[in-house]
Image (cartoon, rainbow, N blue to C red):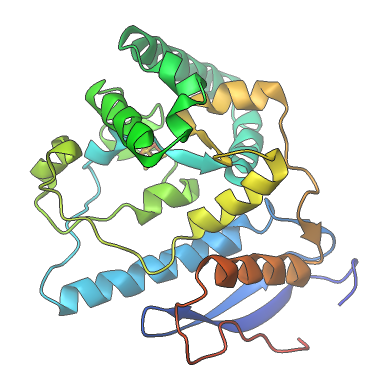
Length: 268
Ligand code: SF4
């Protein structure tokens, strides 16, 4: 496959839990960045979440997350630089009145978080020092009760392109309990693989610091700051996918110890 080739269909296996997820994807043609590969990664994440949902149902504890429940959308949502980049491009293409509306929403949310005393901690590096500081910030953020600016009528207004972190937050407990996750009654579902973490790892290397992501609430500032990952991870679609899958196996080396972690056909 060369840089000018058209879109290619590939199939591969990803170890998930005790088995494999058979996945296939149509890769972008030509020179591709990790940002451009996001639709493939989002579909892969959806497949992982669906598999986990099936397993939870079979175990008698179905996922209780439903459309119209936005309780978890008051948490601090980490967005990888690549997703922030894609959302910035999406934002630029919106009609002017919708852009202005969203900018107002982000501005109001930032003011509310500042009044709650959260912003100062968020912009300082202190909360990244250890798990305890990060947990404290997450709880303070949630208790401020500020909804994600993309939440409208308790539903995500960007559902098809929402961040991976949002896709990965699943619970089996009654939705009411999510009104305060800090009381430890929420039964969260542990995903065997979180693809958000894979993108954060690329972000850490790109930014040369922790945490390698940006809180969704800072999306507008991030966009204006022009911190664009650009060609940081790029090549043909297949090369970028292979880099991504290699990073998956580096972060999750023991997902399936007896098996080849990733298999891709050599030609397409
Ligand atoms: S992006 Fe959507 S799903 Fe994620 S926190 Fe915001 S409203 Fe909720």
